[in-house]
Image (cartoon, rainbow, N blue to C red):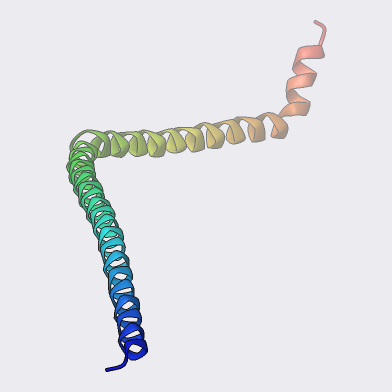
Length: 124
């Protein structure tokens, strides 16, 4: 092989070795970047799992509190509401009775007004 051909062959082998080394560096950098990305992704997933667990706990506690409030409403508040409604109906009935009696008294007064005035103004 002539020396120029050998020199060219060595030069091309050197270029190939440089390219291979460059590829190795690129792959190592890509691996490091992928490792960082995966680590960040796992951290975010773990944070999401923790948040979901907190939300589930909050919903569970809220559900229990709601059941307690519903039970209290049924046992304490609703009977009182029933009593107040009964009082309201009695009050409406009493007002109606007072209205009827007042109307009757007024009607009697109007019917006999002239006679009442005559008796009151009569001097005697």
